[in-house]
Image (cartoon, rainbow, N blue to C red; front, side, top):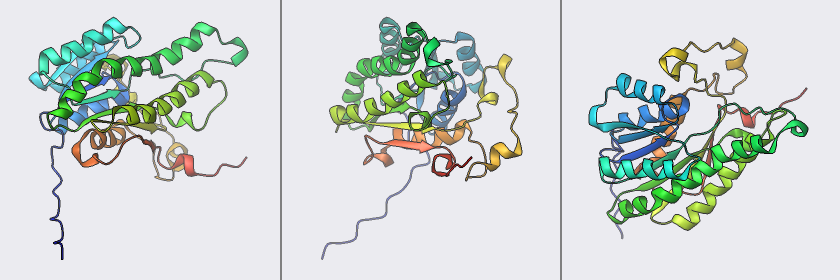
Length: 271
């Protein structure tokens, strides 16, 4: 009879010495993911359009050589190329990529008044950015996988890919496309590189902004109570899931979208 497989051990530092790139990592959910990756042992390169916020991350997190920041515009291919090149020059490898950069405000006004340039800007910030970062990071991710690492991409989508408020068509379209891009790339990039997405719901990011914009979230009891989990989400909730998806224990998970919204999208709503 075959013997029972030995029990597996969960590492307290599942990203030890791995190199993770986080776009839009200087504030909000992205900064939460940076915190989580550092706590899990990773070396992290933040890419963000806001240089003031990026410098604040370096100063406040004080992670030394394990943390670097590069000014990044994910909509410009030359900027993305420099971002990836900096990671390879500084750290010599890339094991994980988190595509988090985008436009935070989903509201663009009524569709009949939405300019084509605004529509394209929303899709460009979320979808083009993820495409360009994946395009230029994939060779290094594949090289890491060939060396035995668990290479992984995590795209930050949104529950708005599944449900909507009025006047958010461009944002919903961008996030829905990002979810589709995720499962398509998982088939193309596997088995060397796994690709998954996370769709957050209401995540309170007020306390995770750069110092000058930081404030305590203004949340009412009803804001928390409407969530089946009993509270509004926080960046660290998304970060915990991102760390799992970037690390070896999630090695059998790819092509999936993970909703993290405190159960809100499962709650029936009646007028």
